[in-house]
Length: 92
Image 1 (cartoon, rainbow, N blue to C red):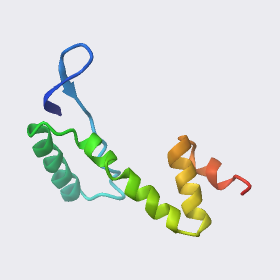
Image 2: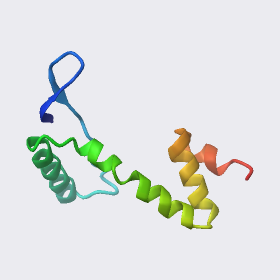
Image 3: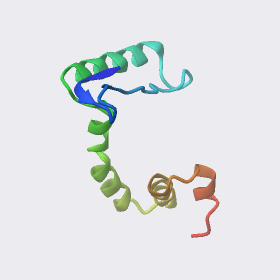
Image 4: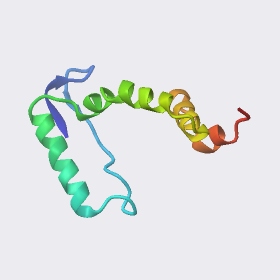
């Protein structure tokens, strides 16, 4: 999908590809609805990936309030880019 009004480093229209979720998690109708929502955002000049990043501070604040070790492992995985198995295998 091309984001209206945005250009990449070479001056061409910004093209962004999205994974909508695996077939075992997301139904075909859900994927179509999400794709339509992303297309509408792109036509307005919004980058759906960037807009999703705006929710990250609230997500991390919510994780900080949880006492479960799984929340800490998830935060570690997100912040370091490690694999889930690596974070779960850490000695805390």
